[in-house]
Structure formats: structure tokens, C-alpha cells
Image: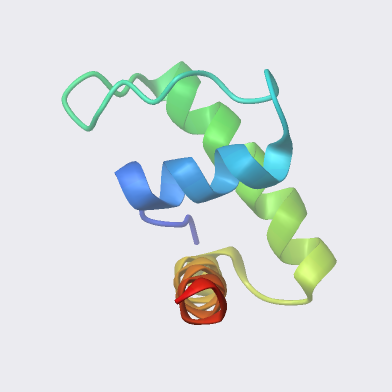
Length: 73
């Protein structure tokens, strides 16, 4: 299953992919099949490296971001 894409997920994936590896996030209204494919492809690879299903990756990304906010705060 795919990861639900939104601005938070896109931003988190872009940070992990590195500069220039994923396209600019066009928003949900501007999302094309080609852009979605690129994000999903990276998400699949990243999730596999984490040992989890892609569908659960959004929770992992959210938890990682939350932990970073707590460390900074």
C-alpha cells in the first residue's frame, strides 16, 4: 500500500532523500501521477530500509519529527 501524501509527508521525505532527489511539492491540487510516483518510490525504499510497510511510514515520520521538536524545546 502507498503512503498517504500530504505536505508534511512530502517535506519529511524530501529531508531524508537529500537536496534535489525529489521534486518540489506542488500541493495536493497540483500533484501529478509522475510526481506521486517519485515520492512513492522513495517512500518504498525508505520504508524497506526501516523494516516497515510504506503505509506505516507516515506515523514513523511524524514520531521522528515530534521527537526532534521535544529535543529542541
